[in-house]
Image (tube, rainbow, N blue to C red; front, side, top):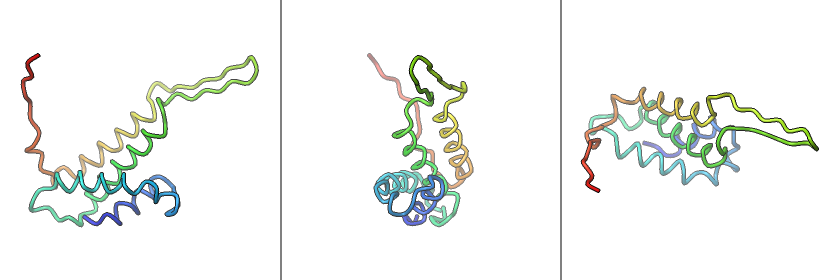
Length: 120
């Protein structure tokens, strides 16, 4: 998978300029590595679904690091206003990321997933 394609897609998702996004390139590289490690051996590494999944993962992580808990509030004098829609932006981001992963599911090898009993 081409990390530059993932980075370009991340920039489109985030609305960042290439210069501003450069600080977040390691996040894109990590997402690219994560998706590459999970790819099936017969998957085309240039499939756009894989690029979108990696960029979606990076975008989700980017916003989670910057966004907080999804509630927004401000206070002016004695007046306080807060907003929380019940569904946080973080939840919406995760849903978007999960949808991108679902679209690429046929290209990913999930045989590493499993359940283990932990004593303790």
